[in-house]
Amino acid sequence: MKSQVRDRGEVRIVELSGKITIGSGDVKIRELIDEALAAGKKNIVLDLAGVSTIDSSGIGEMVACFTTVTKKGGHLKLLRLSPKINDILQVTQLITVFEVFDDEAEAVRSYG
Image (cartoon, rainbow, N blue to C red):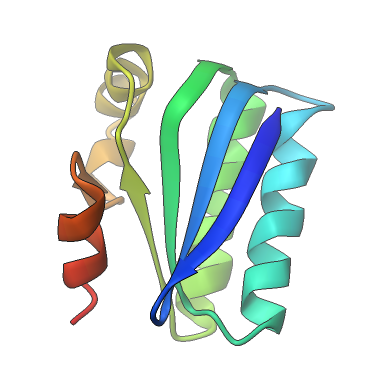
């Protein structure tokens, strides 16, 4: 999995691409979220447009990160889900847990 991190004001955008699977992407997501929180960034958007594959470990890590960010007084939101990831979140009913956006500007504005 590859990642690119940038800030738009008070919002940390984490762009992910590749596979979020056990042993590769799942640990990396936690590291990226921990780094954001350590930098004082509590408003985090995960951009999943480039993610080709996600397994149960990757989904579990996203939920764990959501919980961590929430406990620290922040918000973790998702951006640009692929149809496959959207389907997985629908089936697991996790779509009701995460706020999901198709447009980055809209996601950033949602923190206002």
